[in-house]
Image 1 (cartoon, rainbow, N blue to C red):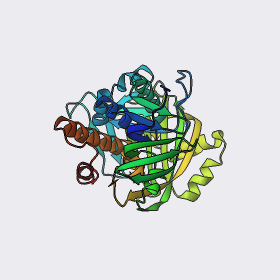
Image 2 (image 1 turned 120 degrees about the vertical axis):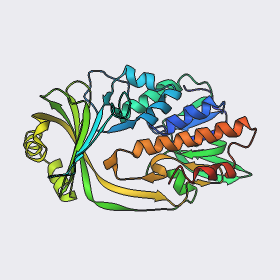
Image 3 (image 1 turned 30 degrees about the vertical axis):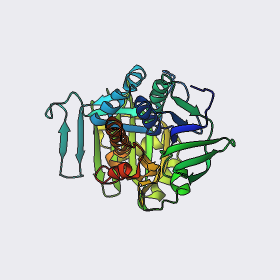
Image 4 (image 1 turned 135 degrees about the vertical axis):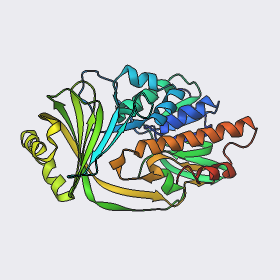
Length: 343
């Protein structure tokens, strides 16, 4: 994908992750010249590798977008796991089940490793001559002059563009450089993700049970792999994180419902739970998408799906503007995105 770089682009995407790469392909499909700036390229797929702890529950709407972008075929060629049911209950009552069959759907969605989503999008982006990858690289400065952004990269290269898309995560450089504020808070919980091998055959659905200390969830993966999600106090999660796998296995046995059966933990990681919201999602020649615009509690598994909703809305509006020969990067157009889609 590396080509001779011309300095002027229709759009510059800061961040080449699951969201940024989707924006790049979608804008390229509209015939725009796109530069995607990313610090690190995804590692090649290794079918023998253990699943990553970072998993996303991809909704049917997100699958539809990924098909439209041409990336879903690459996901299926690697690995993913459809789930047919979503079940949630409290300790004693309030049992709720969503079932794909009763909703007339082949599945409710798919469990996919984040790194595979990113790699699938990069594989598809390789097909586009109007996508220029600037990697490894990052933004060091940007100035808005004469209705264009002048962007300086970490390697000293300077490029100009009509639109900068901030898809660079919760600590977005684009958001900060554009002078867009944010507000948020940290929840009184942390989350631990644990990849496990299961003795029982993998379930066809995902479930979560609510406890006084926080929910615990099961996400089915491929073969006999699964991901466990454990919410608890920051102190408890820190303690779990320091345990050897043999001890963590015993903790899982006591903490999770019996239906899980015996599991062998292979890898684990934890992170604090935060919520953050940009004070605005658009500015002159700038739009924020995904975590750069909004981060939420991952309990409902909607973080990446909200990001793909951002992408879908942006691409639809750009397509409509081009069909009607209107400025596709105008403030008037971008303001339409900041209303209902991001509510």
